[in-house]
Image (cartoon, rainbow, N blue to C red):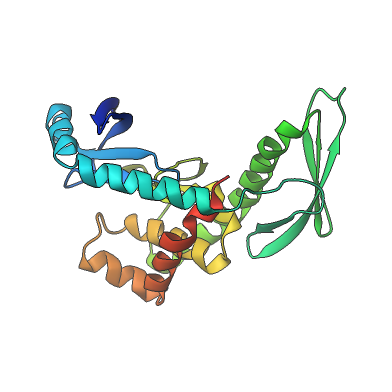
Amino acid sequence: MQKKIIYLQSNGEEFNLQLRRSKRAKNIILKVNMSGEAEVVVPWYVSFSAAERFVKRNTQWLQENIEKNKAKKKSIPKRDFSTGTLLPVLGDVRQLVVKVEPKRSRSRFKEAGDTIEVVVARNSDVQVVLEKWYRAKAQQYYDRRVAHYTEIVGVQVNKIVVSGARTQWGSCMRNKCRISLQWRLAQAPLYIVDYVIAHEVMHLKVRGHNKEFWHGVEGICPEYKQYRKWLRENGQTLYW
């Protein structure tokens, strides 16, 4: 997968975008993630120079959406990761217990009942350890639900990756029967997680987002439109 970084200047402000070439894309696509970071998805047959010209023609739209998402992120209360904090995880809640041991050389996490205990050398490591915990929980759940949906759809998957992608909740490499799903989804309600999984599994059968694709998604996830709306309106809260 080819990538390139381009730099733009608008109204005295500089910002950069990642250009990513994709075999699935039919058109040049501009994306702005929840943190206000931008990405340009480029079809395999389109040159990077053509993509740069496309971006420059759409600079105003891009800047408006970057600023909008940055402002939205600032409006979300900063997450607290101290003892007593309640952490949503795959339809359940765990209470965080933080133990700081300055001489500790290796951090760890341990689940016990309704709590998740994190032992670190310094407070700044808490989020790093929690991400590892979320990734572990996500992998178990994703594996199980992907198996469920692949059986329904009648497709096969070779690999399920828990990713840290910042511009998409999930992705599918159809030629390799590989699905990637964001670990942050593990904080969302289960019906949201299942929708994203169903969405990517359907891509193993249908390339692109045509009528056949959405009809297939609706068949296994009838209320998918509501779930897409939830992600647009609340997805930002899953970032920290």
